[in-house]
Image 1 (tube, helix red, strand yellow):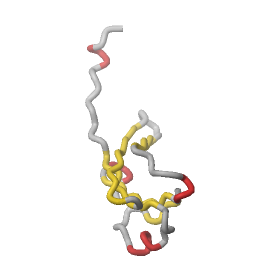
Image 2 (tube, helix red, strand yellow; image 1 turned 90 degrees about the vertical axis):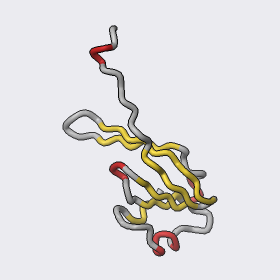
Image 3 (cartoon, one colour; image 1 turned 180 degrees about the vertical axis):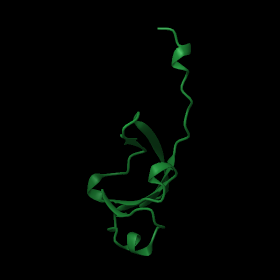
Image 4 (cartoon, one colour; image 1 turned 120 degrees about the horizontal axis):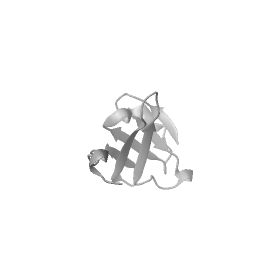
Length: 93
């Protein structure tokens, strides 16, 4: 997957650089908000869900994005809403 632009609006240049069968994918929400990626056709169809894991000094942060197809060659990955986890102290071992 080649990234055409990050943090900017979907530009005509990003779309025109995509091959005829490549997919233009826009991310909405979370740490990938505004990212536009072009998935080359040789990589197959875009995945229905993408998981983004951010590793840093603290605990890992996981975000999931679900694909909404706009056409055969374009789609939007929307940030999946967070599901509150049960309080570990409330779960007996």
